Image (cartoon, rainbow, N blue to C red; front, side, top):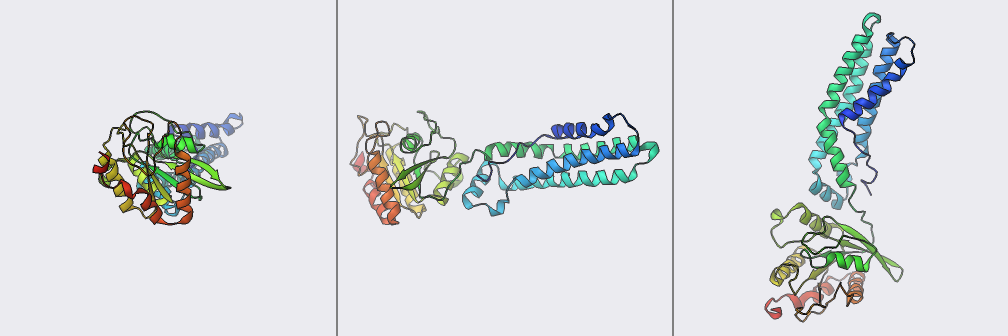
Length: 331
């Protein structure tokens, strides 16, 4: 994955401690601590350590303009592209500036005051590095978040969507090798989880999205926007889970409204599936009904999803869910 190899970004204090400790080695040799050559060497080593570490931090991050739309939008949602660019530009400036300061001060060094000038150089260098400490801390925090993004492969992909707590994670865990956390409260899924399964020597990808709520795009939070990003950019089919028994805490009318919104917004097939058919208060005449708790109907739904994807026909997806458009029929 593009962010997997990002290294820990040290703070300004950590960088300076490492650089100045490394620079002590020539002086610790016990020969000519005050000589110009030793003092020049100390400045050179300290600046080299800092410049290399700062510029490597910048080069570790990808070119955001070359990211796929999926990863670009997720990066924007999670940490903000412009802030990343600004922080990286500041760190790059610091790396170049440290090198420039070291070069200038080495030229100033004379026999009689080389120690004093070296200390001046250290102070200037430390000031520059401290100036970007906030940027370094932001980049390290961003690194921790971005490294958790899943790797999306180029195989046929089923997006599992729906309101919170309708059984999305349970479905993904039952049909794939993914192990998303399962719980009985809304918004359990705090990110996008990926699982895979194989049928007839063909590999398929299943994406478990955070719970979506039926409300305007600008009213949705970052977790909901992650789900929408997945729907827009990586799916071949949306498998929308519905809880007719309303144990998820949301009315059936709202869930059907979300189904309608997704079908109107996306240009890929939508397969509506009613979950929790093992419950006593499950109701409605659903073409596709399953129980992620017992496994009832799951294999049949997976097979139907595969058929729709393989056929490449959005009409099949629409037909599969057309019987769930009217809300009064299921009340």
